[in-house]
Length: 266
Image (cartoon, rainbow, N blue to C red; front, top):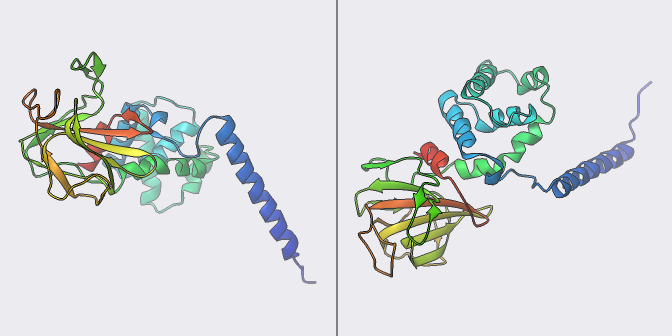
């Protein structure tokens, strides 16, 4: 005797179940004061750098590693723990086995959702270019929050890339120029708005590329100006420091360390 399925009833059950899932996610997002996607403020800079390095060294998506430790409740995994986890995942991927085995073995319920929640940060990381031609002679270090005194005691909100004056500066991504002109600290600067409230900041230029104007749309890798030593004073002030590009990343007007991203884009 053939079994007849009531497809209408199944559809209703599916719709109700899906609706309940959406409602639960919405409630969690609202009452836990947390968005569906992770944002930069959810991670320590050095932890992101470790995850990015693991992706680079072991060819394992950084968000797989991060999701594993989040589900395990590990806020500050060691370098050794991160490496071991990356190698476990790499082995599964090399053997072309599904991640289901990994998820079941380590009881990673909710792994898929955790991976999904990393999309916003991964979107900042992937498909970007370094703001200076990598064939140029340049150097930079992790100088995030180093002390600064001009304009009062403050912390450095970016990464300084030192290179020859006049070196071309390129956009790391597509976007729209929302700030252009003189800034007392940044000198001749460009601010470019990207997706998800991300703002890329390029400062201390000596001049702009011809045809650049506020409000225009730019493409990844497009030249917007040239490295200089402008800033720290009234309009036109130069020579207060060694020529360099100050590069910053902001999300919702809060500064975040660009260094982990720069080393990956490089």
